[in-house]
Amino acid sequence: MSFVVTDNCILCKYTDCVEVCPVDCFHEGPNFLVIDPEECIDCTLCEPECPAKAIFSEDDLPQEQQHFVQLNADLAQQWPVITERKEPLLNAEQWDGKLDKLKHLER
Ligand code: SF4
Ligand code: F3S
Image (cartoon, rainbow, N blue to C red; front, side):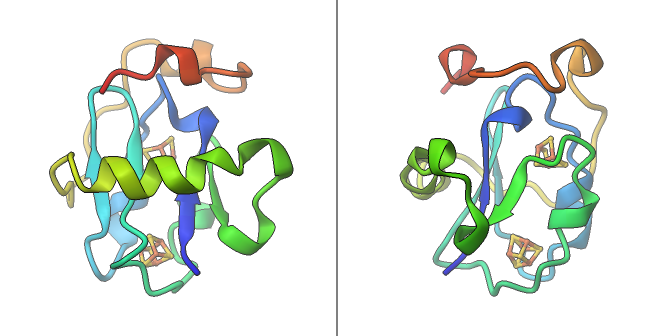
């Protein structure tokens, strides 16, 4: 079991989540973050930190977000670790809450 970053992080990338992770398991792409399921210890700390409510426990993952489990695992292998908070993406507020942003994911 692991925590999973889902659709609403895309194009927002607030990065508040990375500051609280005790095992540095967030990985950063151009407009999305993922959690490495091999490293996550299910501490729950990141979930309430995300302003976009994009982080879920795998147990609580909505049906329509299930594909993000594999996506987090795959991209965590490709993207570098991020441990420090940075500025959100430029139009984060406008994108926050928009649906089906996966088509905008940059790899
Ligand atoms: Fe890191 Fe804990 Fe969030 Fe897992 S649940 S990604 S260990 S902060
Ligand atoms: Fe993304 Fe939320 Fe972290 S928007 S970068 S999961 S704080």
